[in-house]
Image 1: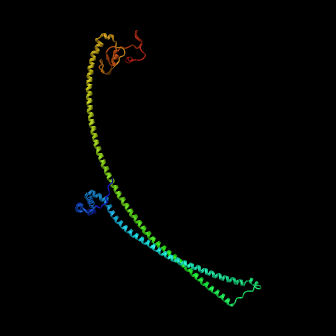
Image 2: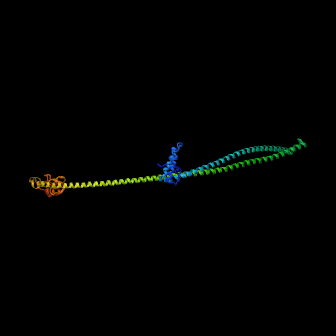
Image 3: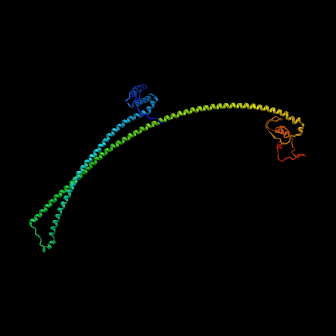
Length: 421
């Protein structure tokens, strides 16, 4: 299992420098141990934890190997983490300021929009009134034009050829001077009124165009200001995003570095364990090989001793067998040949040592030549034993051509006797 990574600054806990000696660390520990002991701080809930952390820092920094491992593996990361935390705090303060700027821009956009809505509403009212005035003026001008057109049509009809043709039949009405003057005055008044209303209509149209242009200008100014604020907001948001990405990348790099160091440390410990295990296996193998060598040596020595005993026993048995064979030869010589050749003529006359001599298995010496054989041949008619070579001289020979009277003809199949003939 991988060890738990250290996240505390032991130098800061002991209030010493990075290059502090062992004596300085011991003095700092004794001073802080008296100060932070839980018995002297009964009202502090974290007194025990602080005292334990002080002990961990002291145990780590007073040991040279642990201190070197701590400095190389953890302390640089802790310092970078501290600077990273300070950088993160600065980044958060900048983010808060930029968020306030974004809020101010959004508020300004809302205020501008509210002002524009009020102005747009007022301009819509003005434009609506102007449009209504324009419609009234157009209606009045149209009415005046219709009156003028009616008078022109009546005058044209009065002076037309139809009226001239019908004048003998119908007598035309004659207008007085006063009536002519009145009509002429009314025409002039209507003309003046029409001209005036047309000028008013032109002014109203110009005014409505002016109001519409004003509204469009206000809308363009609003859009331009909103676009500028939106661009500022986008720039700030992009800056916040880039800073956040950089901060996240920094944290990921720090985490990867810590993980890589932890893995490297674990690999180092694994290599040390493997080397120690290899050395242990080598020691065990060496002990086992030594044990095997000693065992083989003892077994070899035991086997040599056993072989030596066997050899001596075989020599002893061979000597005993030789002596026994010598005794057997002497006994056989003394008994067999006395009976077979010189002592008992009656048995000799009765046994011609012919026929099939069966084998008598077992190592024994021939009573005649004293040679040792694995078997001897025994005469079927008497107790005489001989080796195959001596048996061929003792057994009577048969004639190879013809046959004697009273003897059966020889078999065509070769037998044991033919082999020895």
